[in-house]
Length: 391
Length: 239
Image (cartoon, rainbow over all chains, first blue to last red; front, top):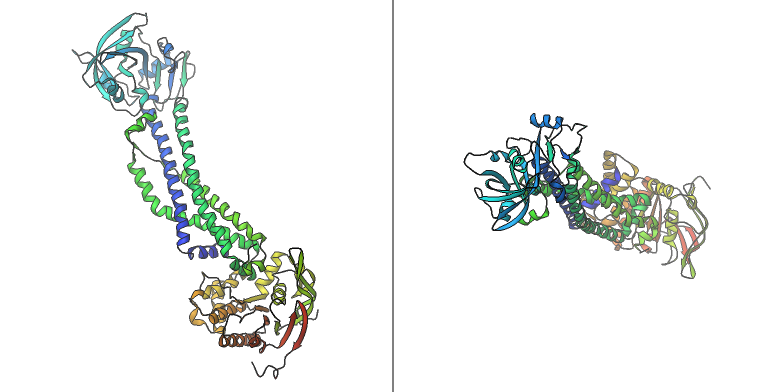
């Protein structure tokens, strides 16, 4: 009990030096928590957006479907097995038919993915209701903002889609842009056109068929789905999570630099302190402190730096972190090219684990860094220390 | 060892390696001190006075010979046991005062009591008692930087005696003080010696200090050159 009090006195009364060290260390606390919070928030935001707009509670895929192999897509469609059909009828799942097509906009042909979705579905948060046919109009289609921008399309524009049906016959027809959806999920936007499921089944000659069946968020997968393979949310999110993970790993370099700078400040102070306070060390031994206790005292002084830094970090860091957590961090337009479903603002998420982990790591490192120079005291003789001589 | 004997050395020798040679700071010193003595180890610079005090203060170890302090052989003490003796039984006063700079006068004097685990109230009472002995009650909240040399040394004395040790070792306590302050300091210590029965052992080559001593042990080149009692008449009526 006595040592922490003595160490605190020594630290608090050392003046500007103490506050400078504590401030540098507190910057590490705040910046590391903030940056980690951004990545954590990114992870949560991306996951939530993708689940809402694309993945639902998991998906059943036709066994041959491989989204990364365009040559198999034309063959990857089938009538859902009975229990999947039941889930669709009960509005606990929705079928999506995926095939290839070609659009002609701006006088150029461009390969696209055509996706059919039930306009009345409530499983995915995309404005599918806009796909309800309007008598007298062309078949409505839905595109995302990125697709609209890249093809110079606007709501109400009419353009041609060409496709090859299940029998291998080519056909083409006019379609009208019924809605341009604003979505953060690029994988339902880029080079894609959404149309009413029944219309697509009809023109592609794939009656009653789907490529994937998306389950509602709380719907449990059912075993024994024949040629339909279940892909859980975690499996479907793996690629994007790996991408976030790689970005997080990149930020480790910045953390290490920050921690290194803070530790250098503490280390320097401790080394200088032991050098300058040699007579004091000798006096403490003369007064009856063992070398181990003096060592512990100097180490404890280092620990106080981290406690003080933590207090400073709480004082100026809490409002700072709260504001960024509450109002988010506006992202530049170029962030869209990252391939993440960010949105316009990124909301950091500061979990208890993140905060506790950062505190433990920095306090632990500070203790270690304070202990290393303090070990020198163990080899110091009281008489040499009292003379203030260098050993 | 006589029951009255508080410190005893026999053939005490301390050598320091100096490159290829060996510096013998103490050479075969045999001497003993009784409870309540007011004794000085005198001699020119480099005669081994500080080394002698360091060994009997358990801060250093002899190379040869025996040094027994309060019944314990210094050479056989562990670090912890030596520290324990210093905590409980020995007070130190140094030429350069060695006050802890960030502490107030009160806190400097309080420090040995913290090591003894005294309660807050006990510490407060004992510190103010010590401040009264040295006449610094009004400087309790001052910092060492605000004190004169004489005041600093009086704080150092208060810190040495606050725990009521059996032995106080003072290494050149007046070397940094003017004549008036030196006399004041010596009078204070003499009073404490009489009233509290604390054994004071000084190292000094200051004539002003020597006038107060009851016993003078002279070291020369690390050897015991003389050991004599001084009568009141020899001291010229001092204290």
